[in-house]
Image 1 (cartoon, rainbow, N blue to C red):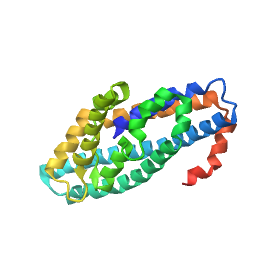
Image 2: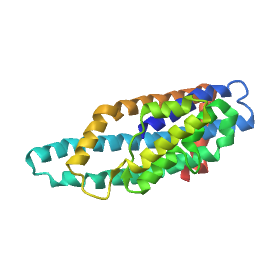
Image 3: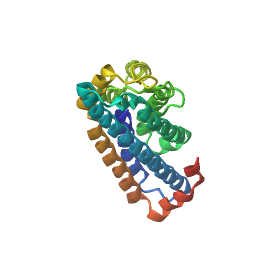
Image 4: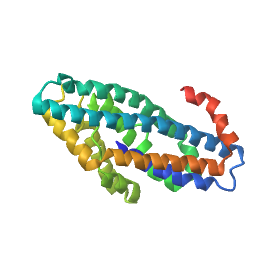
Length: 239
């Protein structure tokens, strides 16, 4: 999951400087406000993702003790802890994805190349974020696509190659996640241990947090604080 948002934040933070020069037009001020709301939503996703990773670490600690000596049957109910956080993340992702998709033409105006790279992530029907949502709705903790897969679809200009790799990511998200509707036994424990060890999601989240901060800094560089604070009372925050 975190690989997708790492790519998303990187693209957005690089796109903002394209607003330099003509930003005083009403249309570009609107785009700046949109990006500020996107920044706000990204923060919500980031905070919840950090809580999910922390819960996985707690699960590994408790389940490890339970497997070694017993005495912690609640470790087997970890799926219910994670499910509650994922339900919250589902709301966050829906808001973010709808926001990005509804303003796609404005994003094209900011940076057409950046939008082209974003499209596989935010497509209304089949984007990678929608794949995450379908996995969550299907009572699964989504599997993480490899960073190499995500980088490939963002970097290649070969439409067919990108499509094939993208289909692989979506299939992986939908079918290889951990079920949340059953007790998490030793097999799930080993899967989570391997994920935390091999993917190091905590380090990736720290990288995303740095990217979100770069996005905020870029916005403040090209828009006044007054411009951005106008968005705080915008009705879009309540949607």
